[in-house]
Image (cartoon, rainbow, N blue to C red):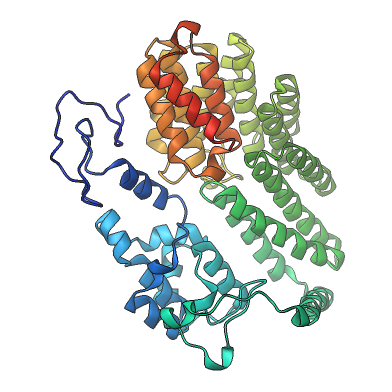
Length: 489
């Protein structure tokens, strides 16, 4: 497989060409239009907002936006920043910004062009996701405070002359009191006003969190999940009718499952195990067999990445027995196929893959989405390709991988990275050591530190295990080994 990045090889040298991003001279074997640094910067920019330094915000557009106390105008200044114009050749789209903020394009447009957002929780969330500096904001971030609110100014040079202060010690009791007051208010609202509309909103919120698992960094998503559980726990204590309590329990079970998945990505295996058990216990209280199936599938997923293949198969079969018509049953069949593939069981692998494909054909179209609560052909081809890779069936595995990469969106960083590492293993099995090493190194080095940890780094180590002994000294393999080792530092 050829690479579209800066490491793509060619026999023709163009040493005089310049990077279209920073204007540095490109290496002779670089046929792309960007140097390696700019290429990584462009790709990483699409995955999650960059934590820029203070110089990034030193523009007239940003100053005017912050002074207006209008978050939509800040969004617009961010999207049209000269940095993005230099790297991408155009402004960031509202769709991309929306994915980062868990909004659709129309909502971003309304925020940019409509009245100023006043909801403090939303403002704080937007600021934290985009890494907006506290010293320029007109509201306080958690644990921080504005500088001299009586003489608030957003001139960057004036602000940078003063340090960002944490909450003063003598103010901490007031902060704690404010937090308790909000908690008491939430409890009061739950007792007096907890209606079906409130639960509807929580159900919608959790569905958005499920979609966010496909593109938001796990360390960022974890905070959102924890805050949601804290809020819903209070509501559950005062949920009123049995039906409302059942619906809230169902939502909390879903969030607990997302907690398990997120902690798994962060390599917190003990936390992932505990949360998946909590998810199963909560699901059992709802008598919802589709939800129970989904939580058992999450357990199978945990066992798979914990290298407990027999536990994977048992949990996957339990999920399919609970309900074979929903997302949980399909995901379980797919992960069962992967476990059997690693065990070299060809018949069982093909059988489980075929079950997953059959169940997907009858799945409600509304559930064929990129979400932890959905399943689609892209995921099926990824899982199929992974199972076939472990079986050593490289030709059909490569075909499945091609289809998966065609279907996955560019911002679904985790699965795309794992698919490429499956491809690298296939190339190794076919004797194409140089191509395999180049591809794997590009995947490992392109992702941020928080992303190379956990699942991706472990998969890269598995790829190395397939390298023949006589190829371990190959320069590309040495580079791959060093790249993987760097993720542990």
